[in-house]
Image (cartoon, rainbow, N blue to C red):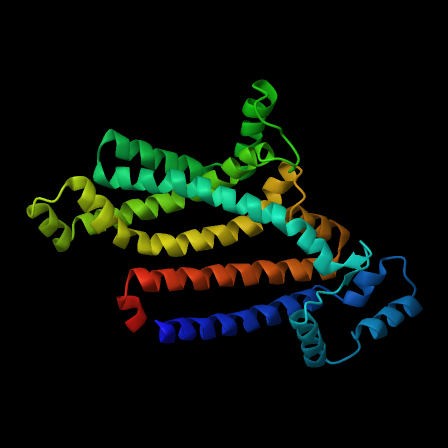
Length: 305
């Protein structure tokens, strides 16, 4: 297991270096960062002063090495727009998005996995078709539209839940449902497909022939193997939720990194945009690494491969 974990860690670090190069390059390819920082009204002298102050006059490899060194020391730059260190701004907003993503994933898993198991056990019945219909509707509906429907019904008409903000747990209920409902269909379909494959396997037939209770066969012998690909997908979905929260946070006026990203794009705040892309990529890669480790524990054959 240790060799498997180290090999996966090495691959993750290689991908992380590639992501850092792409993140660094994208900001430079978008235009002259000195002009973007100086603003449209800046004079040539002011632009040149910013270019010298931030090291934009140096070759790109030297700029990348300097930027990466700062990042590894925890220095993500300084936002001229907000007049604050970028790390402080991001850390202030990150807990809101992390809480939203975790609650959304919890909602998606609680709904999708039992529904996927039931659809597989009751395949080709009304229950199976109803579960697939829910999955199709969930994938077809844009999450911002579903969020607006929730606001109209639960917030405006029934007045059960607050429609904006992030102060209390109740503020997270509707955003979590809107974000989680978008992720649930993929988890449900993969659970159903995995369960159908496992339920048709020889060892499950043998377990049934030995007279084991059906519930035990499904929950103990079939579900464990069927969940292996679901673990990877769930980690990916959590990464998508972090990056996809930009829409939901804007709809519900939540002060997370998603809304911060949207505001940074509008203000052309390059330092914040660059930091957010890098942080989301690091979280995404870390989740994938953890998913690989969990899969390795669930299925020892993956460690050999």
